[in-house]
Length: 239
Image (cartoon, rainbow, N blue to C red; front, top):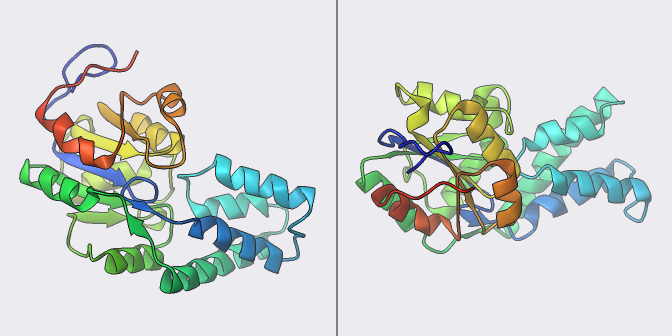
């Protein structure tokens, strides 16, 4: 795979994959959990404040959900903490009753990447309990070498902490050998900030190809199922 300056990236050792929007579709569960959370805290769902809050949530897709809620309620730390707890409870309830749907070919893509010699890390902006629930529901416990959430690393995306934590946890020597993959600008930014030489956007989630390229993605593909082909065949960088 080519880097933005036209050089060849070192042999890849790790595929760091975002989850929601990249390897599964959440069916709107996240937004519904958010709506239940803020209305439960007294925000009128017909108000301009609610509209602005929802816009911010959509604008920050890919980032730590706890961090987003803490920012929305920054003027009242007690309500901010309550918002995080409520969101996690509502999310778990929706996961239990509705679940999520894997992106077509996602499981096969992860298996193919591992067969090609890469380690695989699955990462999310949700908390650890929700992450474990997702893996169990999808039947993906043990599918990847590692799974991470923001609390495992310090900060969520767009910060590079989770990518760097994966490098350390898997005892890798060079972050440039990590392929970072996601459906949001925050995923792309995290990969670039970490120093990955292969940052890939996918079009199955929140942001379109133009937004992913504008954020700096080296390559944009239709789906996670296209990733094994990138590993086998060098791809020219986006211009």
